[in-house]
Length: 113
Image (cartoon, helix red, strand yellow):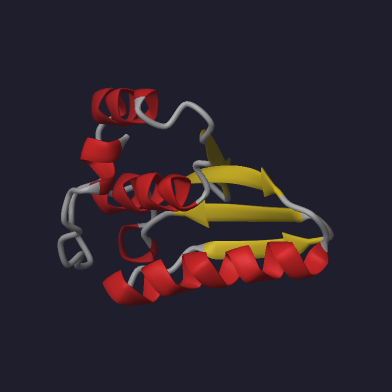
C-alpha cells in the first residue's frame, strides 16, 4: 500500500483508459479493506471507516478533503454518526483510473494507526 500511496497522480482527461480487470485485481490486493462496487454501471472503490461520533467523523472527512484538493481529484464523502464512507472513481472516464487506487491508498494511510 505504501508504494501505491507514493505514486504520482497523473492529470486525467476524458477518454483516458480505465484500469483493466487484471490491473484492478492487482491494485485491490494492496487495498484489502476497500471494495469494488458498481453504481449505475460505473465501477467505484469504497471503504467505510468508523470513528467516535459525528464530529470525529466530520474531522476525518476534512483530512480526506485536504488530500483530495491537493490532487484536484475528489471523492464522495458520506458522513454519518461515527462513520465516514469514502468512494473514489474518475468522473471524466466514468470508471476507475490508477489515480483512484492511489488516492484510496493515501486515504488508507491517513487512518492507519
